[in-house]
Image (cartoon, helix red, strand yellow):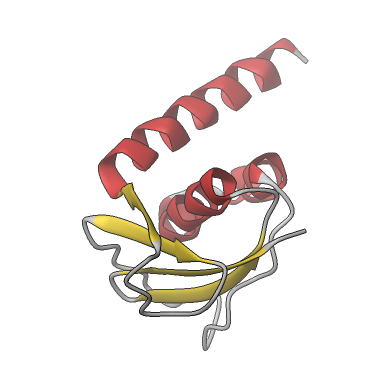
Length: 107
C-alpha cells in the first residue's frame, strides 16, 4: 500500500492509503474527529481506507487545515506534491458521512 506524506495547515502526517483521494479524505476525518460523536469514529476511518495514525502528540491535538491538502509519495514540502482543495474534499467527506449514516439507519 502506498505511503503518502500529507500536510495541510497544522497537520503533517505519513499515511498508508490505497490512493491519494482516500488519504485526503482521511485528513478531513482527522480534523473532524474532535467534534464528531464517538460512535462514528471506527466506521468512518475504516470506510476511507487503511491508514496509519499520524505522528501527533495526543489524540486530542487540534488540527487546523489550510486551504489545500498536499500529498507526496516522496516527502514533505515538495513543490511537485499533488494538491486537493480542502473545501472540495470536505464536501466529499460530508457526502460519505451522510451515506454511512443512512446505511446505519437501515441496519
